[in-house]
Image (cartoon, rainbow, N blue to C red; front, side):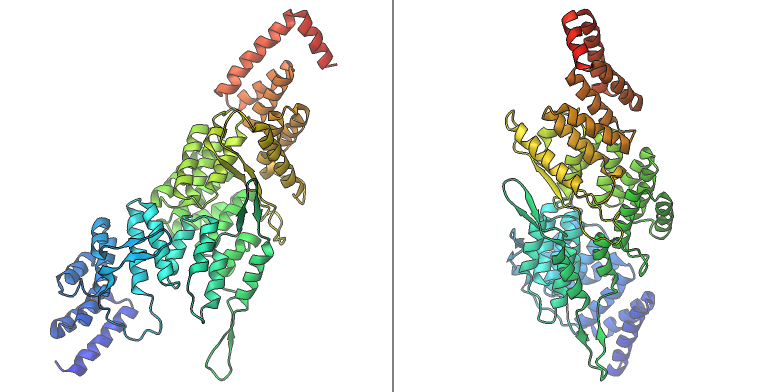
Length: 559
């Protein structure tokens, strides 16, 4: 076969791949490789087999070649085949030995000192070392070694900032804290023509930058991110055409997904953009738009039945209509499809929390906090704990409780984020509680003062938490006022009724305490705390009826 014929067949293979005619590509690539035995043609054949989902055959072809351990492309493609076959340990062995430090620097690259056959027709390649590091991270994550996965993802993005998938895994998997994300971004070596990418990445990382001191968190103002958005939208690239047309990223859906977390923009440009969809689902659930959630869930399940997001949407719908058992079932299904889907874990815990199932909710939140150190799962955990006044173990579980309330979606076009609130709890001992509760009261009151309109049901937990803190400070009359405000926002909160009953009990108003203990037990008849405290209140009521001195004190209290 002449060289011209061989080159023509190579072109046919490339064209078949571009048209997704993989069986044809495999057929012609096999003939070219058989004639030439050229490593580049063998690689082309293996790539066609991989694209045609013949993973075992592609791996066998690569592994049988004498060049697989000397050419990084061969090794990488062989490892990709093992990835598809879910043979993670073999995948790591194929990638070779290497070590990485805490900052994502590769310290042992002896297996990477191999030749690398240049590809044809590419203006800018992703660094092969970056791709290998990323695949290592995926393998370690599949093996549930998230610590190593995090390091290799960092190594991948540091090796080549164009390896967006590595950054996406770090961000979407909440593997880094806000400070770590900022530091990582600062270390990336962008090319002179990649300034727009640096701005884009800065929009992707967490939207608030924390500066910690001994007592509180100070948050950067939103105008920093606003400036990033404007710079990115105006990022201009001149074409080589005579007209020098200008291109901007203003209407790019990824950029809109970032901005949606501030503005709640609707999915008008790209209704199938899944990152936008997640934000939209959260907003719709907070606003109680059950019809919208139902339609979105139906469409997602129909189009993406294997995506965790689809079943998360179903869970959001059932949560919105207060069918918590069903919502929990679908949140669980979302986490079973993708164990790294943080919203699923949080929704799972929230569904238990809504039914006052403390232990199960705590378990879900702890799992989320362990898997996603950079997410707000720990905040939700603290938020739930402090909301249950009956759980003395709440303060023993957390060193830091961050309660974040944002009025992003209730303000329409107002893009100002509500001031964030943090309550720092020192190591739990029997001293120092009063100071901490005073700080808690200050932050809760400061938060509520920034609500631009009348309180809605979404603020009920914040009001209850303030009442709990006031009760701890023995400011019972103020606590009762806020408990009653909370009941005006939501009349089916066990925690609110229990807290109000307990406050009356502490005041010595046993009649009112008994009334509210009964109301709490009407919501959940088997609540242990309310049952025991009701028995105690009835006993105290009886005892006060016998003791004339106490009766006198009681009459003075309620006249």
